[in-house]
Image 1 (cartoon, rainbow, N blue to C red):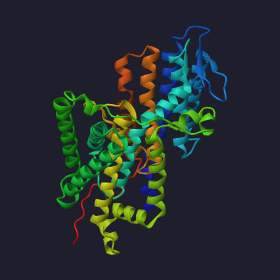
Image 2 (cartoon, helix red, strand yellow):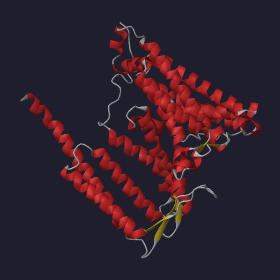
Image 3 (cartoon, rainbow, N blue to C red):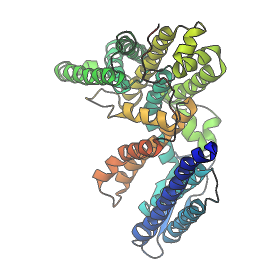
Image 4 (cartoon, one colour):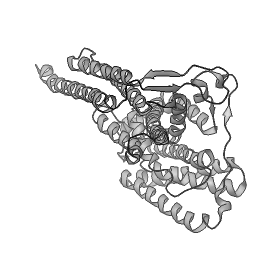
Length: 422
């Protein structure tokens, strides 16, 4: 009897989620039909280019689709998924259904935006990966810290400080590798400060992180205005060149996306694999996860809880500092005030979306990178959507993802809780 009574709230929660998702799918289908499909001229076509570069080794024909029928087809898919969700025919695999609906809606939106025009689908995906790189560094930093039980809101400040130091050191030395090393060091130092405040003095971890963020913004903005603007030689760092892998880069579609990038893109791939293996397949990872889940039990078996947290927070800060270097020596080539533009906070959202796992965090970063690339590409194409709304796309995506995941993902049990040894 007790088990049956306890199952009632859970069943109600599942039913409420199924109803909410089905309504969402029907609303998206209605938007595709009434907003996007209704304004398309008869006979209009959308061309998606599947080649990137002037002379690819293997050329694929362009994908040309009739605009209005394609939009209506995508609307039908969304409505069908809504019906499946409403009848709960899909069972517990609601995430698969949600993925199908999002892909259908995005493809319908792209078809509407490019009606009568052409757009490079491979170019959008490539730009998505590039824009996801700093977000992924921030997300991986968050995974390292929060798996050990420390909330790292200071990722934004670490990214910004890393970008600043990388620009200055690379410009002064003429060597971008020195700039990367400087960015990693400053990220580690800021993380060490956060660890002292959060672990030793047990300051509220959210407040400690915000203090570091505000300090980083203030110091970098002041020095940029007073020093870098008067000494442009200190803000002209050399950038990393593209590393094009032979043969692999010639593979259609995926070659230009995954095998033609700079050092930072390949570093993200390597870190995702290394951190995932370290956290889930080594003794080190078992200790880190035990400290993040149940520090008192970990202490009982002889694990130094606070040392483990110090180490992971500093390592996470170094990852964030490396990600900050991307903004200057890997992308724009110069430091600008507040150039990270909230990517550290978006990285935290990607970490949550990815379920506090390295691979999940990276895949979630691609979602946010796609949203960022989409608004940039649509503004170039002259989309009828106002530019102000396009600029909001990455941040709206962040809000929707985080709000939609409340209560559906489980954070490490001791995350954000200081440990006091008895």
